[in-house]
Length: 106
Image 1 (cartoon, rainbow, N blue to C red):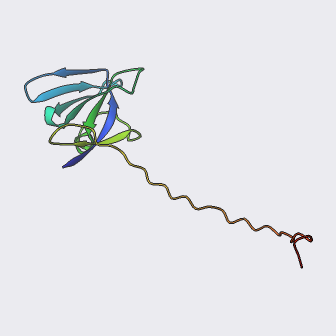
Image 2 (spheres, rainbow, N blue to C red):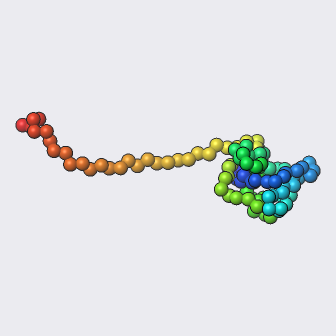
Image 3 (cartoon, rainbow, N blue to C red):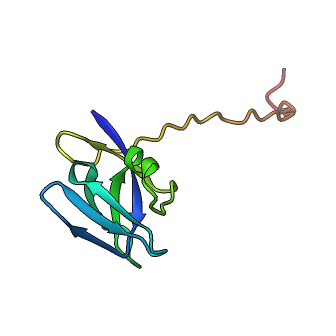
């Protein structure tokens, strides 16, 4: 099953128990996140630590996040699924008036 996740920048993420994480945002907001809804650290972000958390649990929590960076994860393996983008190329139709060569004309 696929799970949509958002990349969330956090000030700290600490383990409270075997099944729960405590996430603290930069604005001071805190939330308890189940470990089953945490999909690892986002290593593309360099300025601060960012973590992949499922979108549906973020909607229920009072944690600051942005929906700009999202990815799909396999909920059974925890691996990130590839993102495909389909673009259709429609060539422009060029209309050009061409006069026939007089030497080739009979």
